[in-house]
Picture 1 (cartoon, helix red, strand yellow):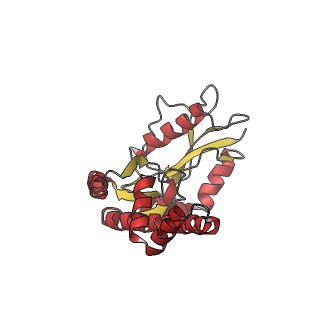
Picture 2 (spheres, rainbow, N blue to C red):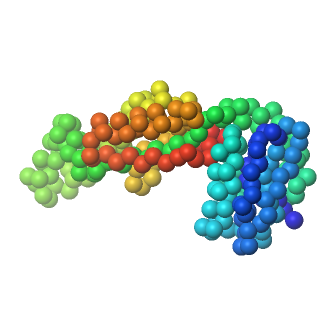
Picture 3 (tube, one colour):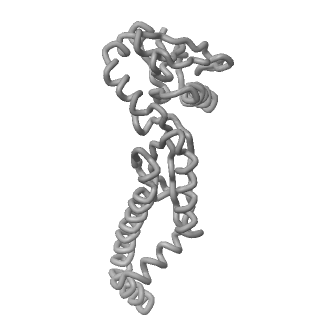
Length: 237
């Protein structure tokens, strides 16, 4: 049977898995495979595994339990190896890389920050501060049939929106950088212009959260901050 892999830990990491079940319709039994240096938390991979809510929740529950006791290398949902022996072989062949990454994550947690901004507020800023946009906007209002001007205005606003959102994102990351060990940007979502994960010292998590809150307060009500964490450090593995 194939082996489903949840996470890699140091061999001495506490493996408190009581009360947890793995992925699969009936909840597979969790176990570990180990080398003298590393361990992997695994289970038997069920047939036809899909990203159903129950299985995603089971995967995350295992990671959360392991994270509570120290650094882990979290695996993405759905990672499957041929069998336990193949997992052991991977641990042996990559012991240097895995050990180094675990040291980098020791005592640190990932937090994800997404930020959105009210569209009207952003457009108002662009129209009032950009002369070219303002002139084209006035022209299209005075000449409703000026099709070419409307097209140019739409293209220009789109460019300015991307530029401003990028600037806002860089500014927020810069302001929070002193409270984090590192950051990793992901693609924006349809609702959020900023989607960045931060690696934060475990004992400085409260200070980081407060820094996010203060930045949100300074930005004003047009901005909405969504802070999630602590999370498995997918962005830094």
